[in-house]
Image (cartoon, rainbow, N blue to C red; front, side, top):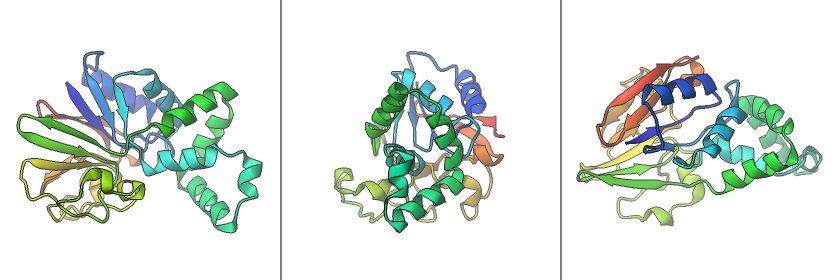
Amino acid sequence: MRYIVSDIHGCYNEYIRLLDRIQFSGDDTLYVLGDIVDRGPEPIRVLTDIMKRPNVIHIMGNHDYLMYTFMKKPAVEISAQSDDYFLAYHLWLQDGGQVTVRQFEELPTDKKKAILGYLLEAYLYEVIEYNGKKYILVHAGLANFAPDKALEDYDMYDFLEKRTDYGKRYYPDENTYLVTGHTPTIYIEGWEKPEVYRKNGHIAIDCGCVNGGRLAAFCIETEEVMYVEGR
């Protein structure tokens, strides 16, 4: 089976419980739509567990990218950067990056290098076709969208930051689905609950685990959703 999760945000216990809930095995594949780190209590533990699993595919999230951007530089080098860079670093810390930095800095150098290398190799998107349906997996959405625009023609930031407009259908083909995280489903207008949203050609699976919602797994083959309660 193939499962999709998103925005684990350091919630290690919930992540492990969800794997147990779906009975995840070596014959399955897990797609993680980014934001593995920050905010929750054990971001590095989640990340290192995912790194060990050859059947987990990591799609880059904006928090993962921020971690890579800032942690590849020593703290003294960050402080010597421009004011804008330094401000961006502190905004990241305030948005949950502090726990990631603290746990990352406790690691030996070889493990730090392995983590940074792993983040650098993350996908920006993935496409799954099954049973006549196409699932386009990204973290935040598709900024600067055009229905006939090839995925490889989007800029990296088009996948990472701008929130999806869940009130409109992006692809006219009713069998094409845009699968996203990034925006907690409780903030989707007209939905506003910690459950996977499936309307207008969208499947939104960030159910706000780190903020007291739930961690969700969507199965491609069965279209079933399984949850564990968040923090």
